[in-house]
Length: 269
Image (tube, rainbow, N blue to C red; front, side, top):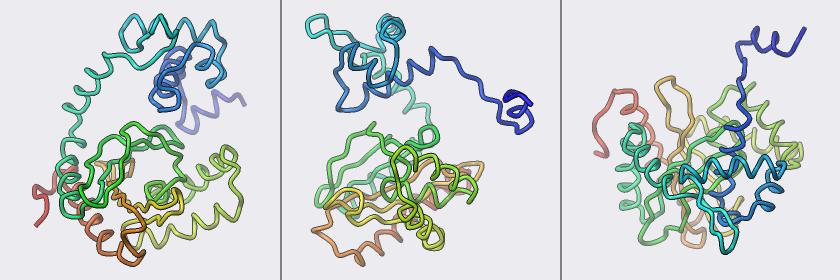
């Protein structure tokens, strides 16, 4: 039986347009700090692309001002029209419009940095919005990408999936990141606790000196593609002191989820 027939029977037929996929990969690469200004060779090597193919796509993106080219340095960077698209996306995204006031309120209440993390594709996540705390917050960059196994946000997303789906993703990431069976089992052991408490924590496990707390946001289909998060410095808190902040975050996530589903109107009470 052909692969196409299998995809049809499983209801998972996938359509791929190579040029569109390459363009998205290039933009994603240029959004990373390390590659924010890169020449053709660096981009092609990083994405394992033929230089001629990479060049053609870059020229198309450049024509639409989605990518900027500096003739002096011969480097490419994200273009000005993406600013316009980003602003329009923010204005037209009901979910983000709903969530932003909660981020600000959380930062005001806790002094920590509050962040909205969104799943991108199967195995990646990215920061799409933030509100930096005034006291014990940390600086974060909107657009920064992470693996789905990183941080409290990754654990929260994985714990919210069906077991079969999370197992499949973990096996895929295991090959990408060379994770051991022990590390996979440690992650999976946290899932029942996360589901029971309604939030996940990470106390310096991913980034030394930084803690994170994440709670899931349920969409209209009762699935989780976003988490709301608090970041701070481990030097300022003991791990047990994260519990009330986790409960506050869960309450905010529950209110956001209800509002997205059209069931609630209030922020905090």
